[in-house]
Length: 389
Image (tube, rainbow, N blue to C red):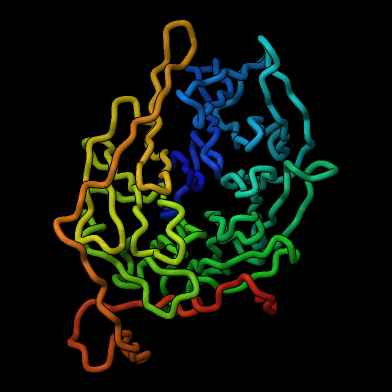
C-alpha cells in the first residue's frame, strides 16, 4: 500500500493539519471520531481485507471533539485526550468481544500538543508540543515506560512528514523568531539532531507537505516564485535540480492540497502519481497529477468521500474511503478505486542547465518566472552530520 493519508484542513498559516481520519503507513487500518453531537466515539476501519469494515470503540463516556486518534499496524488505536487544560493523556483502544478495551499509557504536560502522522514502522506513535521558542517531540506509544521525550528542536515547528521507512527521520516546518519558515530534518535516534532540508531563497517560506521515501519525491508549498503568494511545487530529496512549480497545480479560485503519493516507484519520482484535494466554494473534488504529466486531471469525488483521505497502490490505483452513518449508530464504509486517466502522449522532462545563483535562472535564459532551487536538498540527512541550531 502507501504512506499515511489524513483528512486535512489548511490553517491561516498555510500549514496542513490532521482533523479526523488517519490511515496507517501500510494502509491496513484507519481511525476517526464517529458519532454526532456530544455522542462521539473512536472508530477503527479495516482496509486490507476483502471488504472494508468499521468497528466502533465506544467507552462509558463520550469522547471530546478535540480527541486525536492514530491507528497502529496491529489494529489498536491510540487516543490522545486533553484533560485539566494543560495535560494530555494517552491510551490504546482495541475491540474485546462486545466491548472496548483500554490500556492507559501515561500523560504529557503541555499547552499545545498534536499527534504526528502514523510512524512508518507501525508500532510507535509520536506527539509534538510547541512552546514559546522550543518544540519537543514525544514518543507516546511504543516505548517501554510510557511517554518519553525524544527530541527538542529550537524554534516553533508545525507540519510533520516522515522521510524514511523506519520512523527515524522526521521533517518539520520550523520558524526561528520572526524569520521565515524552513523545513528541517530531525533525527529521532540522535536526540533530535537537526539538518536543513529546504532553503529555496533566504526570505521564502518553504514547507514540506508530503514525501515518498521510495522515489524521493517531495511535495512543497513555498512563496519563493511569487513572494506573498504560496505555490505548490515538487522536488527530489538529494537532487541538485531546482524545485518546479507547475502552472497546472495553480487554480485561481480553489485551494489544492496533496494527500497521497504513489509508492513503489524506486528512484523514479517523475512517474509517481499524486492525489490532490481541491477545495472551492462549490465543494471538494479530486485532482490527479504526476511530475511527468502535462496537466492535472480533475474528477468528481465519490459520494460520502472522507474528504482529504486516500491511498495509492504501487500499481497506480487510488483508493478513496467513503462512509455513510446508519440510523442504528453504525457505519457503512467502503473504498472507491480510481485510475489515472491516460496522458495523450508521454512527456520527457528537458534537462536543466546549471543555475546562475545571482538571478536564479539558467545562464543566458530570458527573463521570466524564477526557477527556485532547494539548496540543501543535496544534503540528504540520512548520514551523520553536525547538528544545526
